[in-house]
Image (tube, rainbow, N blue to C red; front, side, top):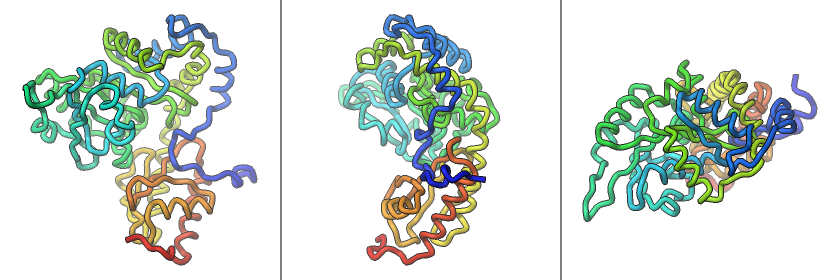
Length: 359
């Protein structure tokens, strides 16, 4: 049964970045052994980097403040200014990292629309540009798994293997924005090492569904990671006694993947409930991880109107396009919270549509 305190709190479905650190994380943070990480002397950060590299079957790993910084470092390390980065049109590196690849790495995104975010070699190959006095040269291919803006879709392994093999034959590196790669691993029944083996580098987040308060990891070859470490300092990302944060990251890395399946089950339950509500358009079968994106056009509301009105019912969601709303499940929202969210949407839509209807 939900407690009175839990009912008084909003149901937070805007993102899994809103997770709070667990008590185990807080205890580990309080007891963390620390040093100066810029000097490579923080033992807890060193353990986190070593463990992340081991789990992903890589030579080395780098602890960074954010996933956006991790992706930017990968782009800066693999490319030269004026290069192009091939990515899916709605990729996080293209839409949600404030053009950092252009502003700070001097690269241009070559964005390609792909069904469900599955950027295949068939779509990539025609967009590759070789060195020319007229054109910018392709320097990197970036894939995303799970794909955020396509509803947490999981890239088929056949697509990953084919893209990486063909890219390497063309002497192009491939980076993975694996912010939620552990969700992909749980959904596919494979290890993160198996899923990501063909990639040259991988970024993954500790601070999303894994629940750590801060931080992401960049893994890859030792030489690549050492260059990225210099790039991290250049960007102002050198941290001192960062073991306090890394301690929570270690707990997140070891413990939270074991319960991600509950987030996936709650997301599917949420999608199935939404599909039964008149005015909501969603295919629950496409919800395979913890992201639920649905169309509200038929409710007579824009996504912004929908989210603002829903917030008055103490349920928080986010708009992604004019008529698309995103809800993200995580360990701080249990099945009772999902029931509350569905009840709030039903109650809201049973009332009259807004005076200014969506056009």
